[in-house]
Image: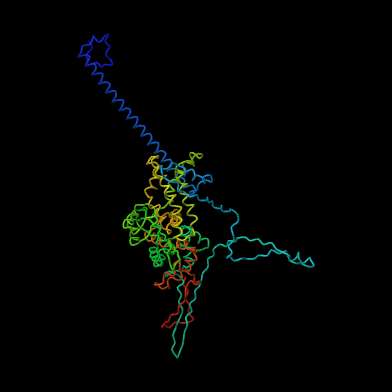
Length: 573
């Protein structure tokens, strides 16, 4: 008889069941069942382990794809073209996207919109502005050659025009203020004229020179050391420290005008908002820290005397030490209207009270899909147009085609067309997104793009209900792009005072551009007038109200009781 503690699988089978006693048979069966159960548990454990490893492998592969996509996007943003365009054969994708399966019992409410193609800019000769002065040069035959003929008559001419560039010139302007010895009724007095040649006290910098420095540094993004080299080519030594000092002093001078921008901004029915980081030198820590420039733009139209009039165009930058939500709250806490911005949580406190309503940006949502599409296009160029990302881009393009027709429409007309055409497309687009959301991994790039769009759906579609609103916040993003260019060139703010001065001049120059005003022309005029301009009429100097004076300053006559020689003269350098 075999011992019962030997595993059943290793016990020799008996020749006949009669060789087993009943207790032995029961014990063998129990041992066999226990062994089978143990082996089944081991199989289940191994199966779970395989499933876990498979899930881990899938997550690892997904993470690898995500990292590759992030790397590709980072390379594209750093080295590639910034335009988010699609190839020409993508123009008909919307029809494919529109045929994607939707939940049942949903009517097709889409309205076809004609395609649009921008005219390609010519790479030929630039057009010559009609307001430029013309320098006429006649290339006649030499007189010695003409003298050989009995009669010479000009019967026609060929005119060729070229665009000439004259480098900037530096000159010294000498302002002479005579002093007069005046005698009337036997009483003599000395009087003279005074003239503040520079906007800054104890400075020999003219408004034109200061305007060049400010416009070049903040509008064109030239660092001070580049300007220092430029002036040196003209034989003039102006150190970067001097230019930095002038900039901070000028910002204090222009502060009343900057405050006018802030008040004008808060009177607009719509405000666009965005922010961008900027390094600032921290001498105590011997390193840089990150500060913020918050950009705001006024928009919308108001009904005045039965006509819709656009509000003054203002771009306003606010310098802050951090990205905390308390900063936009401090500026916009009393504002009532629409704020068109991204879904950054720092804006959330503004929306809680209900006075400020959030309008989201379709470009932010589109950009997420475009990055995915761009990656598909690199990996599978033949099938990229069939991807979900490409179809999402087609839906968004459909909406922009409708907006393109409404550029010159007033707010009521814009709202009417949007309700008629955009609203049905948005409803179908939402249903399509909801259908696709169940087909993709939630944590994938595509899943996050769909989730972002659906979670911001109310704010993304709010523009349909008000003709003053836009589909995106490109207005402020275009303005902030100049700040980003300057950040790459300047590297950092030298101090808090430098950051605040930058906010002042970025605001002034961006507002000039928004109103189609040459920043240099504006600054060279206003810097010469602002010291003498009444503070209660300072808004007259705002770019949207500005009228060039043609004079950089005005002389005033003052009386003096001191005895001065009229023959004397003083020269200041």
